Amino acid sequence: MATPSQILEFVAQAHRVGDAKLTICSSGNLSWRLPNDEVLISGTGSWVPQLTPDRVSLCRLSTGEVLNGVKPSMESVFHMGVMRERPEVNVVLHFQSRYATAIACRAERPADFNVTAEIPIHVGREIPMIPYLRPGSPALAKAVVEAMKTHNSVMLLKHGQVVCGESFDQAFERAMFFEMACRIMVLNGTNVNPLSADEIADLDQYILGKKS
Image 1 (tube, rainbow, N blue to C red):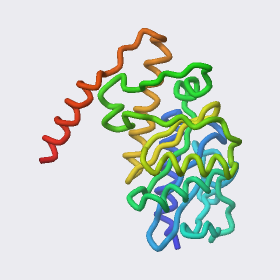
Image 2 (cartoon, rainbow, N blue to C red):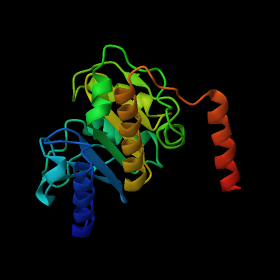
Image 3 (cartoon, one colour):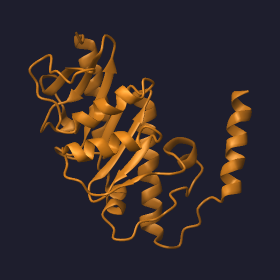
């Protein structure tokens, strides 16, 4: 079972998300894989920025069974689905930040988000666009899990965004750079010059060089 310190850490990370304005009120949800086939998920209807320990749900990852009597977020199906498909993923964050959600609600959306080097490096050089599907629906959960088998960040049209990571820091970083890219595009309109394919390839060489 989750320890009190793990629950407090989860609550602190939820507040971090709220402090960064990635979620407001009851928008968004957060999950964290624990050992022994368990996962912590923000409770249904809870406010992530003001999450309290009693609103944190503990579930069995393999089955979705609720272990502590707290009903998880209605989006818990895709949180756990992503973790089942990708064993390296320990954190999933669904957020609705100011500029990224503005982009998600536009009639015409940019095809290329690679406006700074941080996007292809951290967020992903391609960001799948998932058509509007009712929040909490099986159809939305299925679409998110399928897209995130091969991507770390997705846009939910007329809804919000989802990112995942091996750690809280990695998921948070992806969300923040996702929002940064969308802020740049909203503020600049069509006057944006994304990185070219050659510039992105050069980044790949730089990253490989640092790892070798």
